[in-house]
Length: 350
Image (cartoon, rainbow, N blue to C red; front, side, top):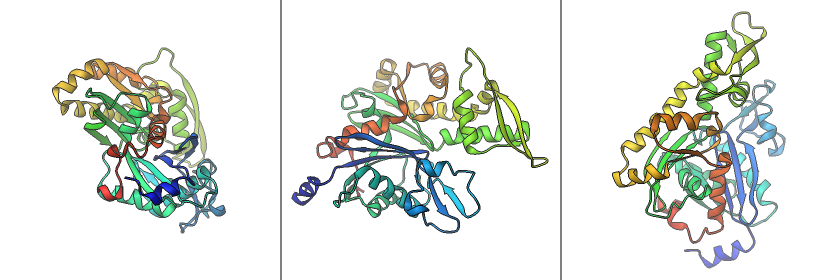
């Protein structure tokens, strides 16, 4: 229940929602929708936690420094596997995003944040503390699969099963939803980042060439696939030769990248199998009709829906604009924050 003071403060500030991800952060403001979409990267002075340029070296400007900054600067991704890896730098990043999204209001906003379904109590407390220190008046948490279900307009409040697979940067969330709850869930720390690392290791092993994370991500986006495609592609890549340590270029094919991506893709499929094996039979019967809905930036990988459908034998659909599904769900909740408290978590509910 909202207190009179909280109600009064709410008249002078807008509630803010944040999909704080390993790879990127999306921010929504009540009444304005999604207002910010930037990489979860912060540039700091090496050896310190001091953010450069009065806190402006965050997001897109900081990502451009990844792997290219001089020795005195470090570009850091403070989120790892969907949870906070560096508290102070995450706090600085959240503060920057809140100020950018919330404007110059002197009233601290209420903040709704998404969290992985497999998060521990300690990790959950870290998210709440970090957001409060960054400027939140009160913090609410929503499990990512629930937010994704709302974001793609699934009727999750009904007594009918729906299966969401959200592949982000650091985690893959597999959850069966019914009556606005997680009936069954599996959260694995294999997602987009793991795919990038698989490409880096493959190129290193086969071509004796060292490439960076941004190059690996570009390869994944441009020629990556999880299932055979009608037209195979070839791409020139550049990196550092591991033998003579000099710059070198070579060509790589989409067939090779598909081979490199098999381990993380198989891990995601196994997570879906594990979840289904533990799902009650009546809800399993619903899933024959409702199928699997894919969300998250990781499902933009070509053919991932086809290989899941072939392996799991259920209908599979990729949500429209899957990257923003969780943020859109958060935005839906912001409009009814006081009414939907049953599906949210707070510091008091721990």
